[in-house]
Length: 87
Image (cartoon, rainbow, N blue to C red; front, side, top):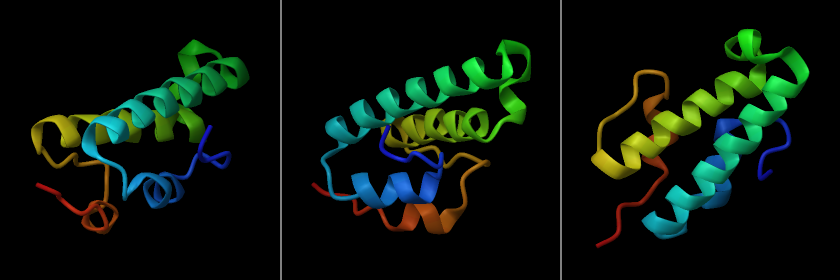
């Protein structure tokens, strides 16, 4: 996992200079890892209450943002501002 603390901000700092396809791939892998940690620790019925479960949800929303440009409501604007759109 890129962010051992399940911190979205830490994750963004690591991937912000990557190209979009690599960013999407890394985000997908990170979301899967975070979800597995949450399920292992809290069980599938309590995943949304764990820090890693919330982190996984943010990462999935971030993938939506990267693919479609739709700003997710569960991610703060300043976290998205540090990503530089490249042509």
